[in-house]
Length: 611
Image (cartoon, rainbow, N blue to C red; front, side):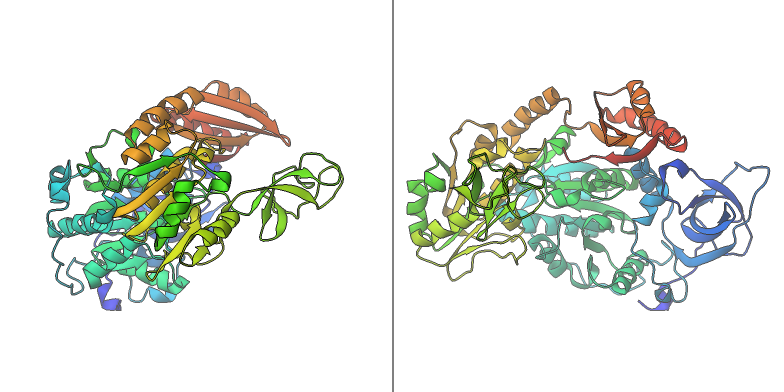
């Protein structure tokens, strides 16, 4: 982008201003008042330098303030001509800070790429350039009739045409890319911009590729690349050079103006949760940003999460069945059910979902006869690529009692599946390795064996066969959402089968709600069962969950809170509290945590921890 596309802000502040200092700790999570001299060219969103505890620090201007202390220090200088947020985006950032009990400084610092000052040529201001600052390609023709034919589709299209709202979209697998293009096209037709969020980039999701191809120069991929490239792209977005932004988690904060759509692709994917503070979830931020911008948020997934189902958002989905009937069979030895083996012999392109890595689990030490356990951490030992390794810490497998490396191994896992599938299939068989390139079955004929890491957004594949092995393991895996994640991967994989293909799931519990959801192609029954199960566990869907680490005094303070569930434990001299809260109680909880952080009682607050 040339410097001509950048211009100074039309609104310049002076006098007492509220500044968020760049000290991302909860104990300092409040604004400080400084005196901004006239003519400095700073306003809301400006990055400035201020004196703080006798040292120069950076901070962002939040706006004018009437809270003037008796002694007010002056803003030292304007660090960047760029406005990093406007009033509307600041409201979103404050919401994130409050909902996830994170310092506003940490939230702001995560909403744009690391600065490259040499790219800020000529000065830049968020919201300064007009929407016609750069030429645009004509809009592509929409794939009319897809959303119109969906149940709830007309209401979504009406909202996209200048309206607002939040929707759950469950597309037919063959429509997944078409409906996002149609939704974005309808948004652009109303003169507004769109953000499309994908959970990962390797390989490039078919959804992202479809949007980028459909809208050409109007769309940009805001992810990956060098530090300079990322910052350059962010500046281009801020100057309204693009109408459509496609990206991963950080793109939910992209500085788009006249925002009309936040589209969360594959909402059920774990990649939409930020693993570092602030621990936000893209879905929830997208809903909040759309509400604040009076735009539309679409949470799209073939199998949405129970959390999004609990929000009561209108559902948009096709009528009728989406994929071939699902055949339920009992597992044979190592998953070799006769019907699956027979189907593999006839299939040219197939995917076999095998969630267990390796070739088997070590059950017993051959030397001392004790149950196999890791000598380093006591974890489970797994045979992988000819070696025995700890599935927990990764150490070489040694008996916890005698140190032996010889074990009796119960066969099972993706390596063994690859071996017997290769004997059954009439085409090459390939196993997806966790650290290798992931690709769909080759068009010339291939069987791919893999687990969760192999289920990617490839678009319609038209496979002859999709086999789901070890379905019963989903209910036994640790984690509150483990079965839900398994179901989502099963349904996405089943969507790869052609209308004339076959989907075979092996289970000893055919009436399990997750299996029945796969058979029906609809997760509603599973969501009902999951809602009851999580409520009984003390973590109902829609509740806000926090893990708080602090001193011994923390347990007393937590007992005074209004919590649905409160679990307290001591570990290595620290007090750890796991809390489930009604969302309406989160602001009060946040105020308490900030006050306790100032007193040194709270050391860390982690929102939405993995359970």
